[in-house]
Image 1 (cartoon, one colour):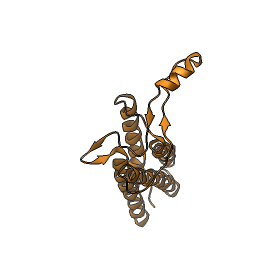
Image 2 (cartoon, one colour; image 1 turned 135 degrees about the vertical axis):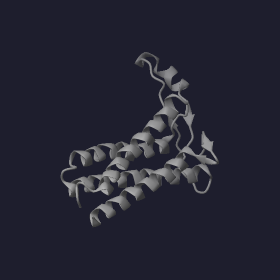
Image 3 (cartoon, helix red, strand yellow; image 1 turned 135 degrees about the horizontal axis):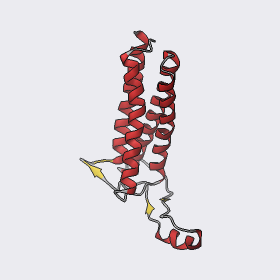
Length: 164
């Protein structure tokens, strides 16, 4: 694997941009759009959170192509895990299979003195109801499709870089 390989460079770029965009979209939907995450929504965020430092390490090691590719591959795997969770979550939302029965809450903030009012004001978000969709696809579905495709693209680029 050559550290100057364009395929390796594109793999690293995807490994960094995809989780940044996915998390940015998730947090914008939450804080600007008022779409509070359920438990499975949070599960989808965690692998993206792990992918970012892995991709940054891949950039830091760009002079050592094999190690850089390894960390970009780890980031790609993390992105793929988020995509798999997203597809599972979308299936729960569409009623294709059973999901979790627990609901998730997102605290609204404030001091510890008014904790009961915080609890009462916190929205309850069900995992089996899609709060938003576009063209019949929920946010979980989009994460599943886009993260899965990105993970495959990263791994394909790394294979291409390995052959170069």
